[in-house]
Amino acid sequence: MLKDGNVFIAGGEDGEDSTGTADLYDSAADSFAPTRGNMSAARAYAAATLLPNGKVLIAGGLNSTGKILSSADLYTPPLQAPAMANASPRHHGQ
Image 1 (tube, rainbow, N blue to C red):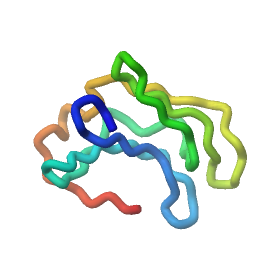
Image 2 (cartoon, one colour):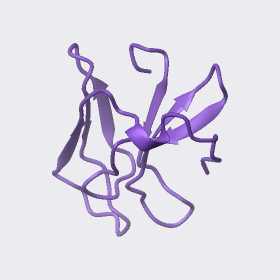
Image 3 (spheres, rainbow, N blue to C red):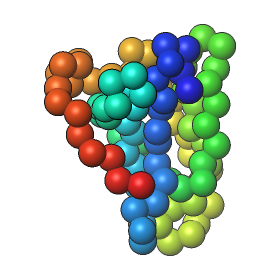
Image 4 (cartoon, rainbow, N blue to C red):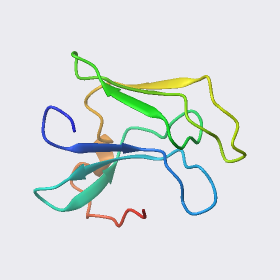
């Protein structure tokens, strides 16, 4: 959970493959919005840490073939893509 109350969702699995997407969930509006960009690699089971400066560090995890990743991504606020700030909610698969 971010300092503003939104939930940052990055990576995971879509049933078969690891994903590299990154989205924000606004629980008050029950809506999802994309972030400023996807991760540099698709990753599941990664570690995510909210840093004191508001940045989010995503590190490690597994790619779609099960290989352990040694890379990381750093998201810097504002996380939401500017063009999507007023977009309609979209469904986010689990």
